[in-house]
Image (tube, rainbow, N blue to C red; front, side):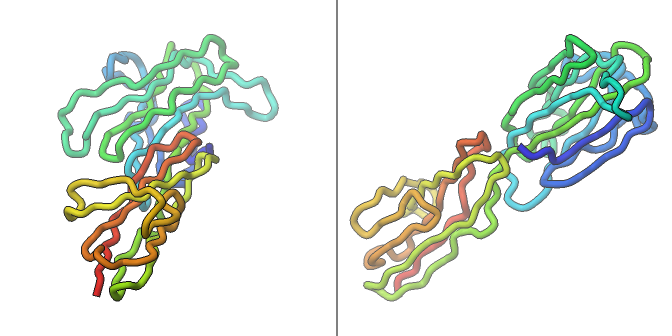
Length: 250
């Protein structure tokens, strides 16, 4: 997985490196000093980082949150005063700001030298998320917080096709994943304007039903049919479905 965000904490000073389709915001404590919150059963002095998703093709994503010692000038790495790290979720938080906040997972380092990770957790882009680092005391903090995001993105959706009766055509999708896995495809057909979808098997007029390009050898009798593809990855990213392309037979 590619680390798409990183926050290095040195005492009360922080630095952000933001790339990729997700990001960690600055602590909500404003001045980056300790503050008191009660979130998802965590009540302590905490640093709280809001997480937002951005980018094209983001629907469901899988997050892995890690906390590691911060190494400086070759000295022994420690994350002193860290009691725990947690990932909190408010389901549908953008549309339901009063919904309850739940804790997806929480980990406590047993040693100051230990790296701990949570996840991956699959969440929807509409969910409101926070990464929370809980303090044990007021000692100087030194830690590195990383957010890994696993997702499949579709850069080219299946197009609409207009083909003369008896002709052939294809529907193609272009997709990629950042989880180092291999993608799998399953094309589907809808005969009721997208209300229901049925998997396509190779045979008859259809070939390559489990590849990025579905081939149709004859479009006769298929006017108005819609085609989409479901894409999964063996690297852990959540399954996604493409937009539908409509076939018009002229």
